[in-house]
Image (cartoon, rainbow, N blue to C red; front, side):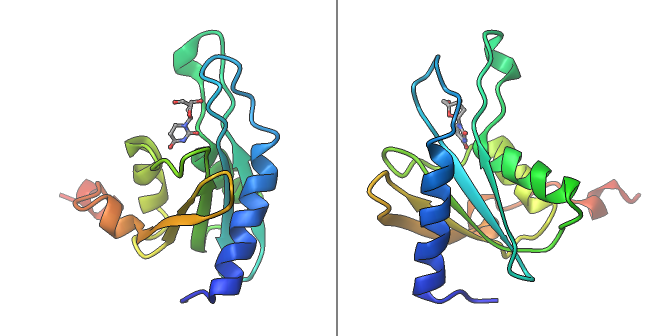
Length: 135
Ligand code: THU
């Protein structure tokens, strides 16, 4: 479903609030994400870093895992807030692709300005999908 501009801005606000809870003592690059389900629920996620750096989890995947853990699997959009409107990493694109190529991806900066609007399909052409496992 296509979102209204008001709904997009609201999702960015929720992601921005979540971002205050990011745990990023090593990179100091705080990321907040807000994932909107098709029935109007919102799940948030933040990056959670670790002294063993590679054990860090990104905000977007935190949000997806939180939603799926609560039983939600159908999503319309994800807002991602960073200080500069940075892009979602490849692993997060792949994880999002599992749940829909048409999910809207909104990248915003710390001023809650929407800098980039795209879809998972735009960001990850040729995603590895469940049908690739057949034959
Ligand atoms: N990070 C995210 O949370 N999402 C992304 O898509 C890109 C990177 C986090 C991981 C790490 O805690 C910090 O940003 C710097 O890479």
